[in-house]
Length: 402
Ligand code: FEO
Image (tube, rainbow, N blue to C red; front, side, top):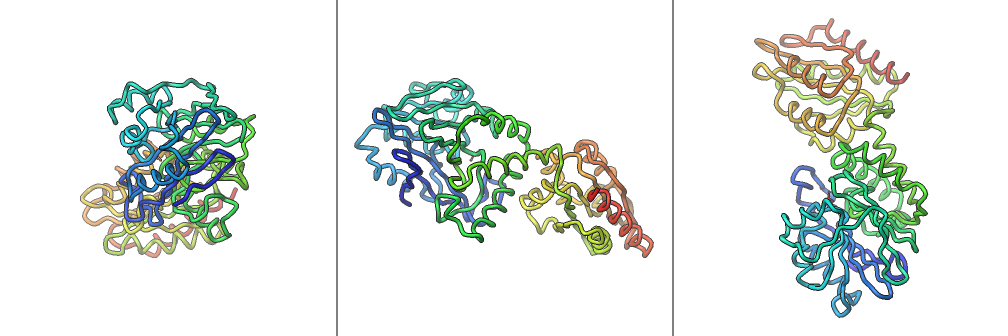
């Protein structure tokens, strides 16, 4: 790739990676992900903001772009670390080796992590909230925004240009041929929308209360561009991605979309036999229904739809006196991601004995779910069970519509 110019002396140096990999070792990224670093060049000092992991050739790609900006013949004075996760710091030791005189600037909490991850101590300096750094015609300001999504996270703002470097915050999955939001066509923008919601649900949702605090902290800043470390640079509509994250964060406590996620699994078709009654009952009230089969659908996509939805239906049989194991895994992920307070129905079959419901009740308590009913049956459902499922689902949809 080539560097992209954001403003005079401000560039993105990025790499496209990961199509064959799982992000964080968990989340599928069939369209990969962008690793965006940024260079700010003042008249006196030059800064690299965030780095990359040596992933799919990202380090050599970004290094070549740094060379093309004459960094190498000119000194790099600082590396700013907004976030310590290795997708942004994995190549730190190699980059420091390349620029031995560089000073690393980060939040106080990042200092011990740099030592433990990369054995670098000497040239590291913690910056304070609101502190500024004069580069000569460019002034960086550091904003502590903890827990979006690690405790050490911060953002960096270029005062003269109004550019906010937000690292993971305001990021998206996916690789994009264009640097800026205003260069995307309608289809590319739809893809970005879906990959932004999935990224948020997978990576950031647990930290939604901190997202709201972080967004509030940006009030009063004149922001012309939001430049995250994943996804595109928001130049056309910088407030759109900020508002979008705010809406996604509010899904934790609500209000949420008037939609229902039906997450179901079945061993021999007896739990599945009730599915159409449930879906028909929900759709009879005109609400949007997302139907997701487990384990055939990866939890990454399940979480994306559950996160936005006010209603949740879990279809799951008993397996060896407990919950069907793939559904246990999905509920554990939802619980860890702070999916709470949804209105829920559960249905499912059992053979010799039940047991799934007892274990599901523990999730109901932990996730503060508002249980609207359970339909559990031995073997296959009766016509009466199907009628009851339809009516229960219809009542749930009605309540969600308000
Ligand atoms: Fe993109 Fe939390 O690292």
